[in-house]
Image (cartoon, rainbow, N blue to C red):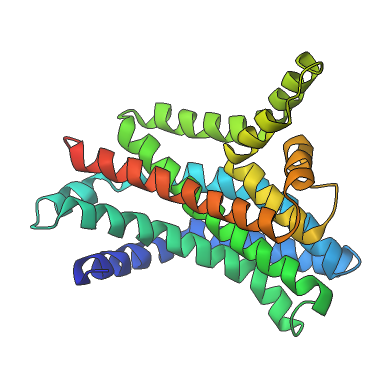
Length: 264
């Protein structure tokens, strides 16, 4: 990491930390975690409920907040572009300066309530660690997708609408469409197609990682169940984690390419 990128990250992080929404974002996870630990009846149930919330809330928050932030920071971006700063360094600084505080806010919101109780129960620590990893990776994935959307679309309302549409598709409709496909092609072997569909959705990959750690059916969804049956265990977790890293790298590369070519 160059000195320029590190300086941009510090500036961006300081700007994000001054905003109220990042404090509200951390407070949401802190209150949710504290409430679940108090009333859910044990660390395992709290982590299970947090997993469901993480798979839905983090993609939505990352897409909407990052899209709005990119539009609001346009004048600041144009000012920096007038300086002798390479566009790749500027994009990296802007992206990490937003995604890192969001990831830290999530980690602090979930981690602090457990730390104040001396940590999670021993048989839940692995699941909690995987939950934190999945939440952080989903933050990086969907913040990168939001950057790409905002850089592709000039109109703010249209950009936010596309971001909401992406969340609705991958977070809500995806498993329903898969189930419809399974029903329509029930006479044919569809397992391999379902595995490909699982790899194509980062939320499903996060669900698989939590599933393989928690070993519960409630979080599976149909594609997650097929994935677990074919791969299971450590091999499946490594494959899902690798694909989630790929899902992080691809939108970052697409956003950086768009940023280098865009005429601001």
